[in-house]
Length: 509
Image (cartoon, rainbow, N blue to C red; front, top):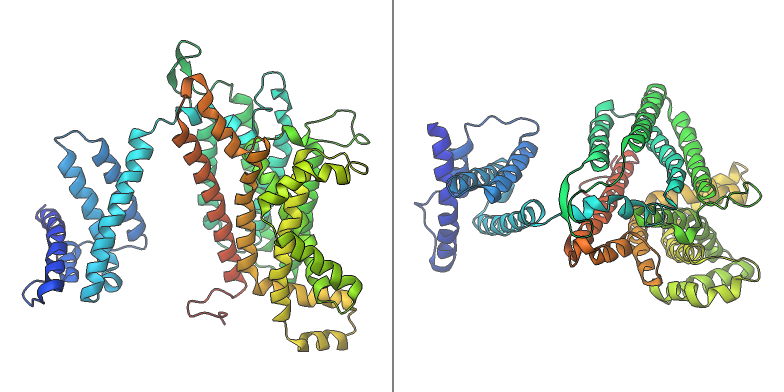
């Protein structure tokens, strides 16, 4: 108990110490006042440290901050002190880096004050002040758009479940082939599954103006969807365990062969997804769901996936075409790349809406969603071509000579020797383009397409949620941030597996 009081008293001294350090910076130094490292060591030196001490301390700091914001006046000071103590303990864990010099101590304490204020404000808004009923009530519309929620057309939502199963199998197989410990996948996957189930089944009543009285914020029967969701999660887990057990100790050439098969299966799955949503007339008499009726976050993901899959092929062709010595290849490649890159994406999207129908309608009666996919693919492909061209220039000419000596054809050299090395070199830039393309899909909002941002913009027009713009837009923005962060983490993991992640720069050998 005395040690806890010492920790709390030492934490209360830190605020005074920040002011004291400022005075020292202005008027001189003092040798009698202990430094921050000594204060933190005196307060927390007795606390044992574990492998995940920093993560546990951060989680406790956030929890105590939340409790402090919701606490009654009697317990408010105690919760604030506990929250500050946890942040101070984090400072103790990293004191060698944060408080090694006098000026670092000033900067670290000032940064702590700013970060603590930001975290308190964010937690206060998200968990205390904001009313998220607008999100819970319209969770399906944000995910799939208004067409699949409409009582007359909502039965078509079955078309989204086969693609979900394919995605789960692909993700599970991809992670299973990495050869890592099972817990590194199964623990986050279990958390992801729990979040999905919670988002699906959570129900609470709210005071509805349009329906008069208390109304459920769910508004649908989750039993059938819950069974299908659990089936998809089980399929992903089963594919991970199966692939992991087979390729855990497999030779490298077998793993690479499996990766090639998985990439081909991913492209094939994307084509299957499009055909399930809107099957061609020669396959099924059912008209399906036209691309113009797609919506929600699913539409953004479809646009981004199509742009990346189709645009990657376009980019590779343009990159090699621009490096060709034949005018019939490099002149059109330069013309396409420079023309597309000369204008902003929103201008080309307006071109897709207004002018492109007059160009393609004699051959292809494309709706606005299909034209948007075409423009996004060309835009992504042109920027990717320039990124790959830089990577191709970094491939030593000796690689080409060695491949020629082995009897490989020019096409084999480009696809099997030059292209893999170029992708390996430019992987961070390629992932940045993918993240940018995912976020750029929100520009389709200007053309009346019900993507996630368009849905979030229209939700505050409902009688029950008039004027609640912040919650809807913030939720969609955070969703895009999570997806972008996930892509960034995948990129870092791939770089690590390729031997590119090295603290000092260059390749890790």
